[in-house]
Amino acid sequence: MAVLKGWRYAALIGGLFGAIAITVYPIIIDPMLNPDKYKRVQEVAKAQMKQYDPHERRTS
Figure 1 (tube, rainbow, N blue to C red):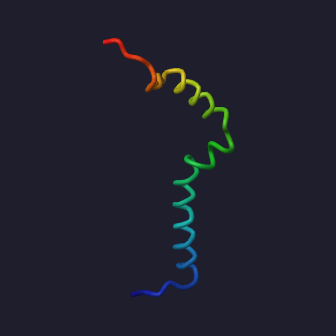
Figure 2 (cartoon, rainbow, N blue to C red; figure 1 turned 60 degrees about the horizontal axis):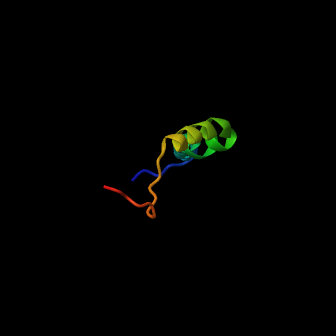
């Protein structure tokens, strides 16, 4: 097995860190920096949602 030293080790660690950062950005960081876009999406989703009420009497 090859031992990574110097710039190769730095490239490996940098690549792993970059891959994690690219994956995490749209999930965690973007909603924190730009909450308005996600608030609008949430309002539309809530308006279209009909929640189930377990106490509602059904007549069928």
